[in-house]
Image (tube, rainbow, N blue to C red; front, side):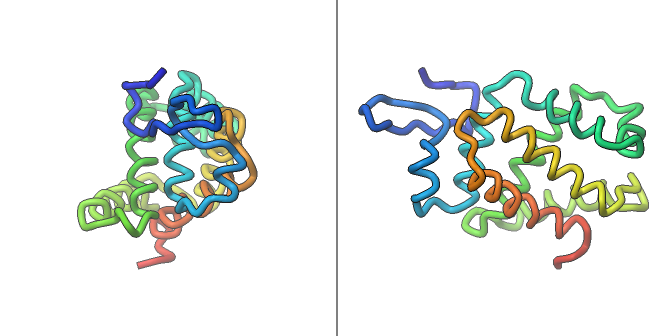
Length: 169
C-alpha cells in the first residue's frame, strides 16, 4: 500500500516483485551506489510513517540535559514538530549537492540566524546532542535501520550542523 500522505515515500519493487513504499532493504542500501542523501531521504520517509517518531525524538532530546529542556520550556511543541520536519528536509537538501541551490541556502541561512548564540543561545555541544538523539531515534524507528544508514544520517546532517556552528562558509 502506498502512503500518499508522505511525499518522501518512494515506491520500489522488492525481490518478490511486489510494489513497496519507503525504502530499500539493508542489503540493497549497503551495496548500492545510492547517494547518502537518498539513503537518508528513504529512511526519513519510513520514520515519518510512524506517528510517534517526532515525539520519541523530542522525548529523547529534551531528556538528555536540563539546559536543553529549558530551551523548550515555553515552546509550542506541535508547531516545533512541524518546524523540525521542514528543517530535516532543508538539511537533507543542503547536504545533497545535486539538489542544493540558492533557495535551500537561504533556508539554511534562516535556520542559522534563528539558532545563533545571540538569539536562542544554542551552544555547540547541543548540536552534537541533537544529532545523537536524532540518530538513536531513527535507529529505534526505521524498520530497515543499519549502521550504514546511521552513518548516512550523521554525514548528511553534519553538513548543515557545521554551517550552523559557523564552521563552513
